[in-house]
Length: 156
Length: 256
Image 1 (cartoon, chains in turn red, orange):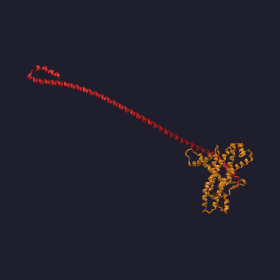
Image 2 (cartoon, helix red, strand yellow):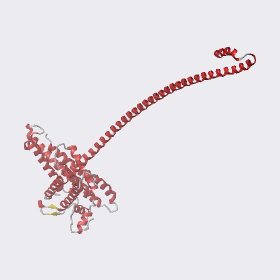
Image 3 (cartoon, chains in turn purple, brown):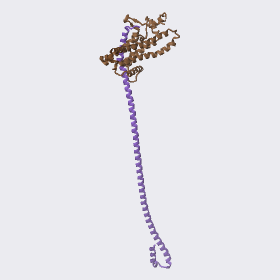
Image 4 (cartoon, helix red, strand yellow):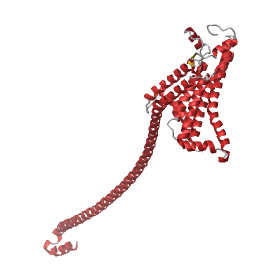
């Protein structure tokens, strides 16, 4: 249990060990650890940034979708209006065309009625004349009553 | 019991507490202490060196992971109690912790095993736990003490250090008292450091030797609890030595 030269030997050994650790062990390990730490920190920061960007993009997409929907609604409304207008115009045109056709047809009918009346009158006159001729063959001669008959024809 | 079979219990105990020596008087060397401490330290440093050489900032391997665990543990302790910048303190603390732990760990090897093996090789005295040798614990604490003095002078300057010795804590009118107090205070540090480690491990070793005197079938009843308890003790002692070294050196770095 006595102190002796072993002390000196141990001090030298201890000193060498300290020097060795200080020079060849500690700095390498602590550097590697610090580097890994910063790498992890960078990775986490990048992840955070990515997350944030994703949120922004989602926001943007939502907005865009909203705008597009509005636009589409506008377009649909416009086209509906336009279609209504076209249909209305077509209706108007059809109505006026119909009106025109009706008028033309009525005119034609009127004309035909007049013609028919005319021919009917002529026929009635001729029939009446034939009838009268048959009657008058017996009683009066044709010449005497010609004047009265034509007056009758004019009265029709 | 060792191969020769000592005559009685006290002879057995003394046999176990005798170093393997070489030389005379002061120039006596405890070969067993020197051998085991150097071998253990060198083994640990080789392992650390391999881990440090292959250290990568990517995914660490098992060895690197383990070494980094230790490094990180020591680094945290140093950062907690030492606020300056020093290239030395953290590596010093790591060396102390690992080395002292390994030397203490020799205590857990059955007390008769290595002496028995050495006996076959013709070596009849062998103490396997270097930290039960005062020479080793004092060598470490004196080295720490010298570092304390060195850093005190380096940081505060020779004048600053002298002032600290002479004028604290009672001012310049109590100069001799100040000096005496300071000297006692400073010397108490390495002495307590060395004796604490030595005392704990010496006592532990002695108890293991006493347990070994029991009949073989009864040894485990005391040996097992004591060994399990000793796992705590050896770690704690290594940690205390490291912590106190850090604290003392950080005190040496601080201006008062």
